[in-house]
Image (cartoon, rainbow, N blue to C red; front, side, top):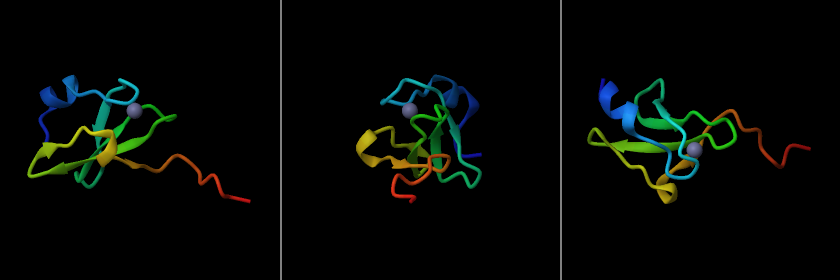
Length: 66
Ligand SMILES: [Zn+2]
């Protein structure tokens, strides 16, 4: 595991201050707030907790669905 549980415990989403969890493939950290669902990248085992670097994860349907 790239990110230690101790680190995950203290990391918070900078946008909504919710906790984050490692994505199944370990390539990112996903915000646990379903209203936010931002996924922060992990580079060289270092989480990049920047809103500008984050992507919107799954769990949020496309707004353009018609
Ligand atoms: Zn969030």
